[in-house]
Image (spheres, rainbow, N blue to C red):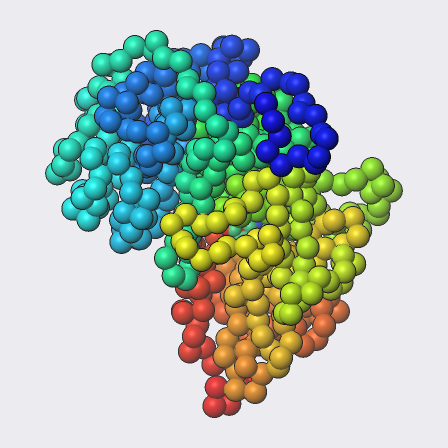
Length: 554
Ligand code: AMP
């Protein structure tokens, strides 16, 4: 063996050269956590399906044989449009494990976008949950290259929709046995493909490798990240079609944790029922999901008995929400930041040893930050000229990252993705001397007022801390003098009617005066994106013609 890029005179290491492969995770769970459960809420009737890692591994091997029978070749993309459930879990392993590429498609996108994505990825086979049968019926004529559409059901529940070349999941499995050995191959081979939600332009594909998934998985299990163990029971609310459910379907088998997959029922009551029935210890989702859980707990007076920890990310976590969970329910929620392009883990917020003596206020300020990178991710902020800015917690610039699980090049896009070897995230923020990142905004959401920037996230966090506010969003609205000024959009708590003046006065003394929003509007709900985040794009559309007080002629 020779080193491909060694220094002159170096010796090759003499350890086994075992590739880091996704299939090894399930093989490990089958061998050492055989009787640990995977519990899923079914799509068919909402009942609970339960089996073990050993059962899942046996069925994944049968599925790998079924894929070969369908003519799936190594490297070919196989798509899923599915909720979090055991069949989706099996597909994660059968597709990647057999050398093909798992392409998880977000079913909440517009049908035209989905068809575009399926065609761009050149998916040969598409597996779908029954919920999406009507959608597939519409998509099929637009995706002529798809050889098989497979309903993830048994024969009894096979959809009646007019779908060409329709197969049935359980029939495919029934035709195979589990005498199958996971193939070994180069760990740099592609394992999975996810498209970014793409608020502007076409979505872009990020093609993960087996190596990047496994390294991400190791890092995500570290104590200062998810901190998973074989004593955990993990319920990912974040969908398996959104950055691989933050890789929980990989990290749970890595550590042998029990896995609870909630299906299509992601509302507060259904989730709280599962937390209690299954003894869930850890869960993760975007802020709107945590809001739903909180509303249910507050309404019913219930209290989770086993849930102790969780993660909130995908968009900025309102500190008031995290504090309520810690204070009223003993649930510690950590803030995290990531992106599809980062598999998704960028930073995670856990305190350091030296933070032990912080007072409450300083601790709160620290917890509001997005967090610091685990080993494997490096980051820096730069100014408009690309000059690196200091990590002093003050300077604000565009965030650039690099690391073992950061995208190097978008799928099917010729143009370079990187800038001098760094990935430009499009997020804006500061980094302090301890490496804690504070995102002030997405570059395109920053409010540009009189040549200065106003970050919407801090304004939203403050609004959410008001006792009468359930949810808040701040957007820039055109202003004749200042270009843009902030508009605060509020969903009040049930039964509450805070006044505009009261809400604006709430900001006094908390921020620079000129950051204070010019106006407040009240809505019943905020528009969400396909990944459950507040859609600033839609809000800007909705309030494009909003006339701010004092903006004569605006
Ligand atoms: P996605 O690729 O759909 O997961 O979206 C990634 C984007 O979500 C990031 O570039 C950020 O703009 C935003 N995001 C994710 N987590 C956070 C967070 N904790 N705080 C603020 N923005 C976030």
